Length: 118
Image: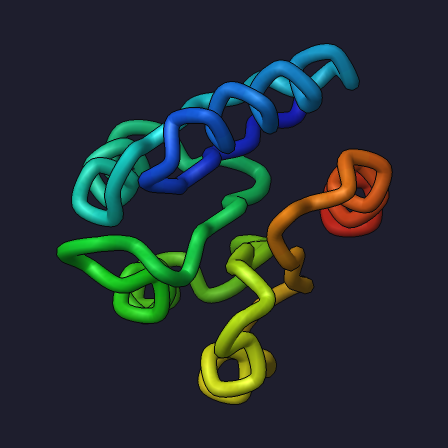
C-alpha cells in the first residue's frame, strides 16, 4: 500500500484529503506543520508528500528545501491557495512533481496522486 504524508496547517484540509486518499486505497499520515512533517520523515519515508506552501512558522518552501537535502527523488505535490500562486511556484516548480490549488478539486487530487505514485 502506497504511503502519503499530508502537510497542512488547516485541519479541515487534512481531514478531507485523508478521507479521500484513504478511500482511494492509500495509507495516509498527517502533519499540521513543517517541523512535524520533518520529524515524521525521519521515522518513515512515504511514497509521496503533499505539502502546503503557506503555513505559519516554517513556510512550505523551507520544508521542501529541507526534504530535498535528504530525499532528492521523493515525489512532492505542493498545494496552496490561488492568491499569490505565481510567486510561490516560480520558486519550487523544478523541484516538485506537481501542484494543486485551493480549493482543491478532489478528482484532481486523486489524478495528481495517481500520476505521481500510481
